[in-house]
Length: 294
Image (cartoon, rainbow, N blue to C red; front, side, top):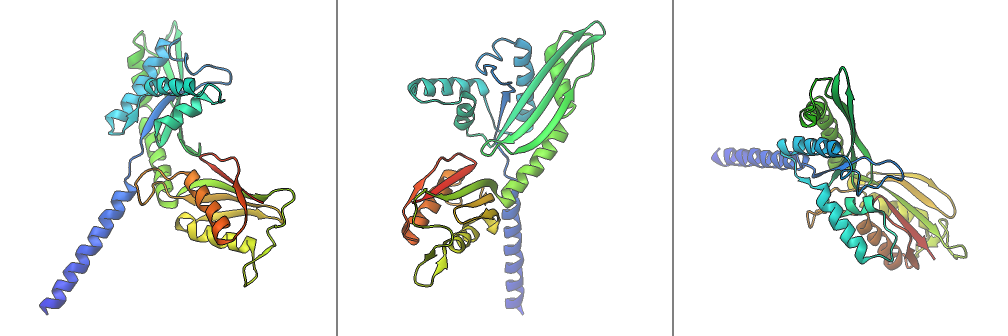
């Protein structure tokens, strides 16, 4: 009888530990960077330098995330770092905003648009917050915060009121979406094609069993997609488009962010080493993989 009781206790304890581990995973808190919203042609380097009120407002947004225990990265520091890196690569064309986001290492970028309105009936601050997955630019949350009108020139207080009017709803939506990414994976796009004079196409038979190339690629997608979660948009003789392929948020071996470039390398090696086809890497980004079979 004691043996059965001990076994039952062990099973219960094991189950509790598993549940705690699962809860720990789903409670992963994203890292954040607050950046100013910029319109086309506007210089992200000077937008805060030229507007003290915007600088105050964005500082208050960052403060709200800091107060709630989030790890945040400073935009100004990352801007300086990006500018230094770009100076060393002066012969390469690089988008400054994209470089800032890349160097930040943040999971989520909060773009903040600030409106300071002054009138005879009172002054106010209006904020538009948009949270995006820093790797895929998927929108995670959008909210508008308004301070209301007050007879004061204290922009810091008005900015704080504007933030407080929307921050909880913003965070609830953002956390729900981010939890979905943790559970279901980060969505990227995969395009597989052929050079113009290739001897192969998606209907080519590969190996001794005569499997179609398209079928083998689909099997690979099923095995390697996070939780087998992927969607093929279409397959033709010369292309395969996977418009929604899920990769894990974190690399299970290193704990670091899992990048699309790693998935791209894995797919390219499979086509070359397992299927015996010549292949080259097409243009790639954090949200898209392009493979070209020769």
